[in-house]
Length: 81
Image (cartoon, rainbow, N blue to C red; front, side, top):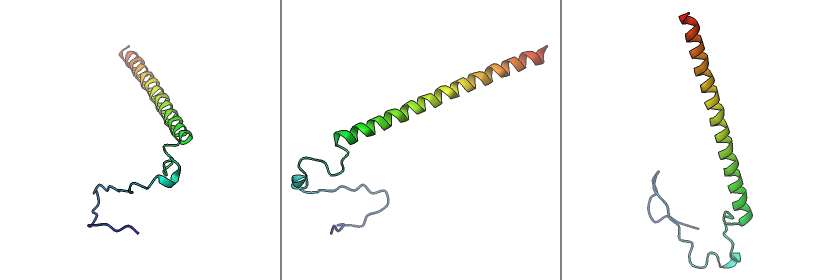
């Protein structure tokens, strides 16, 4: 069981010391598995996919905004005639 040495308040930063033997029985692998090559690759691929989706959305937004501006200009020219 782990016990806090002092009261912990919201927003406090916490640090943990697992001790020098923490990784000894894990055969060199990180217990969180984020260092695992396959997991890391999957995380990277997901991030890449997310970034591409964001870029696609931004490009669609640019096209829509440009079209609205062109439409407003055309309406303005018609109203002047």
